[in-house]
Image 1 (cartoon, rainbow, N blue to C red):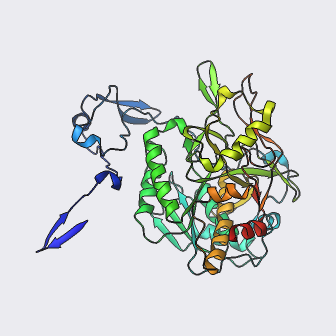
Image 2: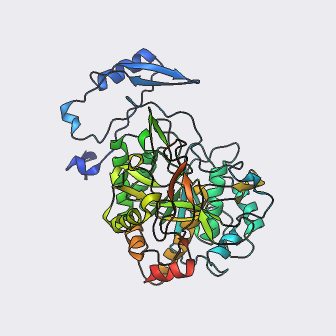
Length: 471
C-alpha cells in the first residue's frame, strides 16, 4: 500500500509473502573475479566457476550455498546456481522438414480444411467487441505482418477475418520471421477469425530456456488482457527446478481466477525418454504437465489425402507428471483409462500413474501450410499447430458467451472433464513414441475410448462443443 504526504512517499508491505514478488539479481560486471565475489557474497558458501561448452559459458557454483535467515522466508527459489542448461536442442515444436515430407504431394491442412473437419461454418467468426486472444513467443521467435497478410490472402477467402495483429506486447526483433511464430499467429487467427489478436514477444531466457515466469508476471501486472492465450513452447520437466515450476503454477492459478484460459502444446516427443544409466523412463514436459493449464495434443488424418477421421499423431506429447499430483477434476477419467488399458500400458517403472496426466484435448497437428518470410511452406507439423487451432475455437465460444451476458470460460479443465467428451470427436486409434529399448520398443501410450494420455478427450466438434459450453 502507498501513502503520499508533503511530497514524501512511504511504501508499506503487509504480509510480504502474499505478494510473491520475484527478486532478480543479475551479475553484470565485466570483471569475472568481481562477479564471482559478488555472487559468493550474496550466497554464502557458494564457490562460483566459469564452465564452458560449445562456445557457451555459464557461472555455476560447485558448492552448496545458504541465504541469510532474514530473507529466507521471503524466497520462493534461487536459480542459476547449480543447474546447467540442457543440451542444445530444437525447443520449437514445428519444422518444415518434419516427419511426413515423404508422404507425397497433397493439399495438406489449411484454414478451409480445419473448418471442414471441425464443422465451423463461414459465419462462425468473432463478433463480440470485448473479446480478444493472444499467442506468446519465446526464444527469439518473431512473426512478420507481411506473412500474415499473405497467408490470409491465400487461405482466408471463405470467412471474415483480420489480416493484422491488433497489438504486440514486447519488442519485435529484426531479421527473418520464425516458423513457430508464423504458425501460431496465422492459425489462431484462422479458427479464431475476426477476433482481436495480440502477440506477446518475450525476450531473454531463464537458464537458456523460456522465461515463463517473467512472462506470467507481466500478465499478472496488466489489467486489460486477452481471454485466451496459446503457447507452443515447453521444456523437459526434469530440466527445471521444482521450486521454479511451483512458482510459475502460482501465476497460472492467478490467471485462471481472472478468467484467462491458458493453452500449452503437449510437445512433439511422444512420452519422451530419459536415460538414467541402465534404466529408462518417460520424460514429461512442463508447462504441459501443470495441473493449472489446458494441454493440447496432436492428431493426423487417417488418410492423409482425404478429409477423414483422425488418429493419434505419433509425436503427440502425453503422459504423467513426475512432480505434480493428479488433480481431482481428472481422477475418475484417468482411473478409467488405467483400468481398461490393461496389457497395452507400458511398465509402471516408466511413469507415475498418480501424477497429473496430460493432454486434455487435441486437434490436427500434421502437414500444415504456413507462410513464413513470404514463402508458403508445406508439411509443417507439431502440437504447435494444434494448440492455436483449439485456442481460436475457444475464443469463438468466449465471444458467444459474452454476447449472451455469460462470463468467459477461464480455466477450462474442470468444465472439460465434467463434459466427459461431449462436443468432441473421440480419437481411439494409434500410439505415440517413447524410449527405443527392449522393454517398450519405442511405444508409449495408446489412444482409447474416452480420455487417454495421447489425445485427451479428443478433437473439437465446434457446434456441439459450443452448445455444451454455453449450457
